[in-house]
Length: 165
Image 1: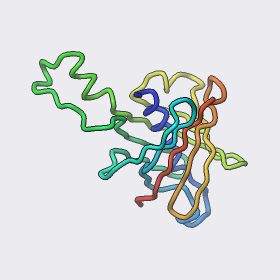
Image 2: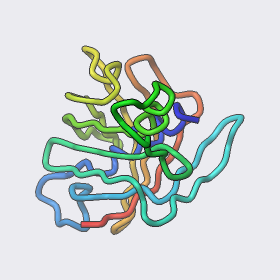
Image 3: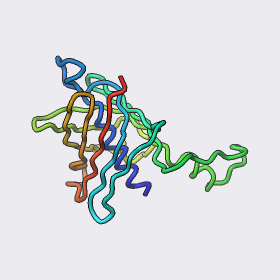
């Protein structure tokens, strides 16, 4: 489930990529929140993200930043952080995702994101990237995971995001 949520978060990150010279409504620059995730493959399903939505993606002209919680309920809070067990710390901080980096747009409505900093060290490895396809309709954006440095995604996830600013 955490891997699925990581994919969902990664896809959500795209939600902010921008197109220079366009009006705000026609651009994917801005602040976005994921509202729905559609998973394909053997565990196919659609997940609606309820309010308050624990995610925020911000895209500028060339950079992105995202923070998300990948859990289906509230995270636990250790009673004493200084004495918390490894399991208590994983339960509290494991679902948190934080990442920032650069992105570029390409023909065919593709966005390629390259993390500079991430909670997940693997995402910062040299050559790491994620490419998504996207569709923008007003203040709604759909992004679909296409490939990463390891190759094409067999069962792509689609994230529906809405503009919040």
